[in-house]
Image (cartoon, rainbow, N blue to C red; front, side, top):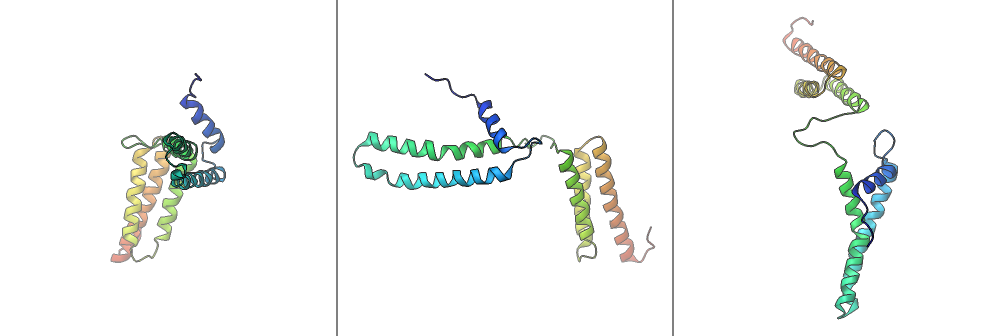
Length: 172
């Protein structure tokens, strides 16, 4: 009896194919593979509809159904479970961002704060962005905390300027 393939080999093989050296998914490979697997699963459904063609032979029907399911549907399930498994963000556990992801989040907050300028709901937008920046600062450590606090304080400073502009008070 052949020995089963250990789980880590499947994960390693999937990572080698679908993940680049920095740990990011290679969408140029993943989307075509998912598309092909979805087509195979759909084809498996169509072939399952053809099961009555085999008449009263239950053994042949059973083999046909198992073949359609295992060869055409299970590969899609395996890839989808691998994608879910590699997501390390679990409730209650701190999120870990790469340096690039973290810089992108901070840049997005600043970009949204600039976009809120002179919008009808500028104060509400800046309030939300401020809460997000402070929350971000609470979740990270080291230099990243300083960067997140800087963004939070810039947004809060903009909110103070907005309030001063609305009340006619001098800008600081």
